[in-house]
Image (tube, rainbow, N blue to C red):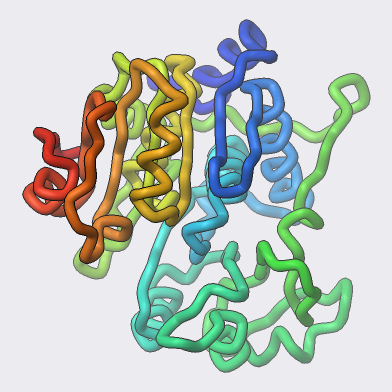
Length: 307
């Protein structure tokens, strides 16, 4: 029988609620497994209250610095039976096409991330102009994207027709909670590939994370919203290792971060490699790459494995 996110996480959170499970270096934030369970469940309950159902699709267009929001929203959506689809592009036309192809029920986005030198919130105004005519309490109705009902952002300011991320969190009391979460073993994540969705279950992501399962700490540097990094989050919840997300920090800062950890694996992607010159990572233990392995080996001067 396939395990669900509830089965995999609930036992660990109950057994080790005070153990540090997540460190978001770029946000200077640490969560225990119990705290992460609480925050991710709050997002799940928020979706349930908004009327989300199992199988609904939630598109992620988050910035690389939104590490805690990405992790909590991904697991929260999975708890609610909602499929998360991460996507990143610097082309407004490709973003529009992708939203049309996926036809999600909602989008979680970073309003100030730059897309070809334009803030995403300004691009969204053109794609979904109806949002700016939507009054508080009214349902969003997009002429272009028929299924789109919810726009959730991580910014500080309020925008018409959208909800702040923190406003979408529902912290239900353990003693007086009337909300319930589904026990689903279906798809919890998907990527758009050749015009169709490639789905991943909890078990799929758990298997993908086996490469780093022997580490006490798994340090992720780069884009937090990828299938590989989602798998690392799932693996930590199942196996109990500490997941450390650095966001889009430069590698020289990551180098300093590593000195505080032992028995770790470092996972990097092309977004942080860039034109980086060789660095002395003498304390680097295990290196995994989601991208150009040869380039990573040249920079780190160490054998790397493809993740």
